[in-house]
Image (cartoon, rainbow, N blue to C red):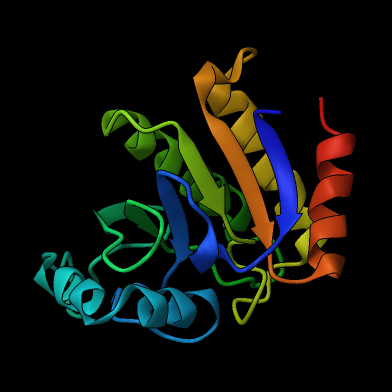
Length: 175
């Protein structure tokens, strides 16, 4: 199946690339970001520090992506993206979240990769309502991949069964 949901630790998945729900500095943090930095080892932090800043303290603006090697991870690459902080839905949150998924797939293709795992971007401390985030994510992925999914295998990796159920529901009820 080209798109599936799993309950797992994203840092343990053997895919071409995992997506990191990062903060704009790309220097690590909590949640999935901190877990990826810990599992990848200090070389990931060094690689992120080497990325140029687009503004003071910002290596990756919201909705954009950057790519680094995976270092000690089973994944070959980490695609870092910064999801939007939820402010009630009237501040382009859906558009910015959609860009995270689209730009991640575009970067995957640019590097000739086929398998990717996404966390539930913005659903942690950024406060995006999971059901709404899942709907945006599935729609963006389906639209970007097209009908045949372009030979790309997408794993929606959720840390809890409850979150996986939300994303599975969105997947089951999407176009």
